[in-house]
Image 1 (cartoon, rainbow, N blue to C red):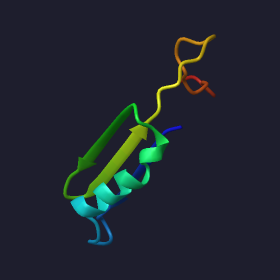
Image 2: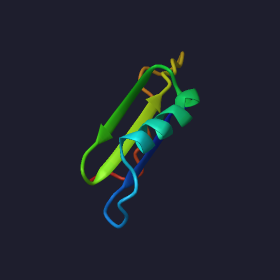
Image 3: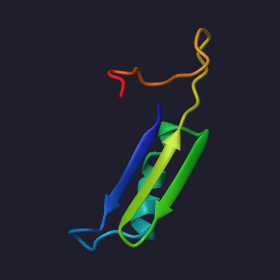
Image 4: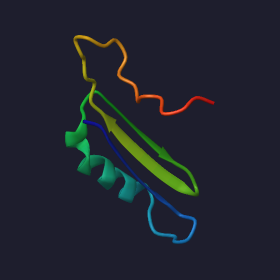
Length: 68
């Protein structure tokens, strides 16, 4: 299972590095295999990733609903 969290500072000026670190720690159970944090003056994002190895699939992707 993976997780993503974040905030935007477009309408409210609440958030920052401390808030983002707290969110990142709150979703640590969502995956130990990869993680990342992105923070700039308008947005903060963090994620956790759990790698899943399926026996019958080489790539686990979302199905294509329509083609462009």
